[in-house]
Image (cartoon, rainbow, N blue to C red; front, top):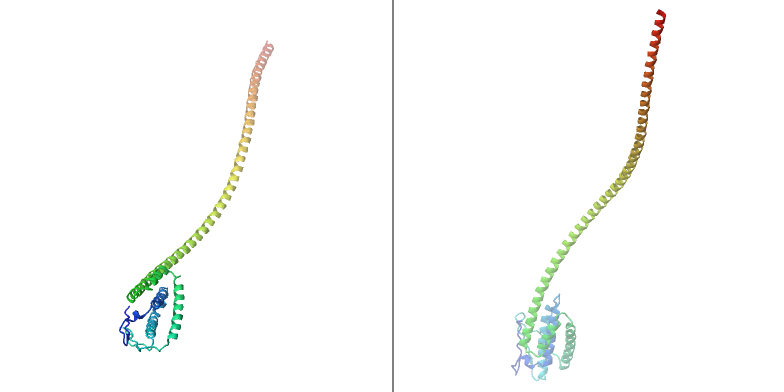
Length: 280
């Protein structure tokens, strides 16, 4: 931090901070620590408050130096800053008003510091507060510069985290789209499976009917085979009976033929005998 404070008092050329008490330095450290805690948040509101805190601190230091001398000498306040070289116009205040304002500001700073201790960076900020309560201004400036550097690192880290979050969101959207495509594909596959299942059930029904028909045809064939065998047996028996009758008839025909031939011989003999008798 580039702010320098040169306060010239008539009759005394010492540094301003040498005139301040430990309570004043502790109030300054608490105020700056509360500012750094507020600036460590996501919105970083402390960047607008830092200048006002330095102005308030300068005003308090000027008032404390004026009241410490008991009004014996007039104080000429000079503020040299690279950004604002013109000193601010500070209205004169009495010792009682300064004490009231100091008590109010210290109570406000204590409440803000107690609320800030419950934030994410409570351990680091508590350590820096304890260190700055008894530290000289150079160490306070070093602590404040370290806090600003920490804020810058936190901002960079937040940007990186935001980029990671955006990448994760894009990945999530891609995954959702892929999931939707897979759902549509699974729906089409389920419909195709249902169609194939219905066709399979229909083919199973047709196969069952064909099996019933085959069974009926097999039973009819067995019946035909059984009936054909019985008929064959009957026919074979009839053929054998006919063959026996034919053989019997053949024997009878032979017998009748032989008898007929014997009768014909007898008739021929009788005829010849008659002719001989007639001629004789």
